[in-house]
Amino acid sequence: MHPSRCPPAARARHLRELPNIGPSLADDLRLLGIEQPSQLRGAEPLRLYHRLCELTGTRQDPCVLDTLMSVVHYMDTGEARLWWSFSAERKAKGGY
Image (cartoon, rainbow, N blue to C red):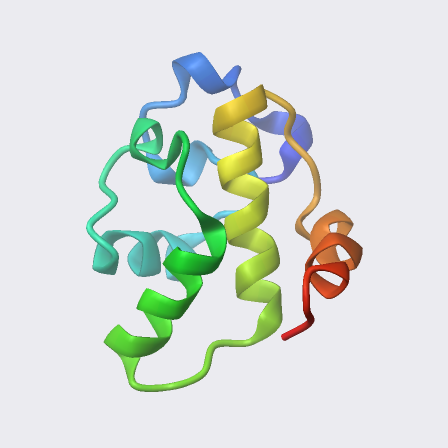
């Protein structure tokens, strides 16, 4: 969902209500065992990313990590941002 249309984080009940999450990334979150947005509070995006790579048997595109950063940030702070606004932060932390 586009960040401008997201409900307040405290009211998000479905994965597709999260910023930047469409059908494919919602499926990826479910693969990780995440069924509800509240399960992302306090999560470690890089750990989720590595686990997703393991589960799928392929190195995911770095934009997936940016998106994971965006949804954890949203659930932790309530601020919905576009996924690419996390790219510089990801790169500063060591790339991918």
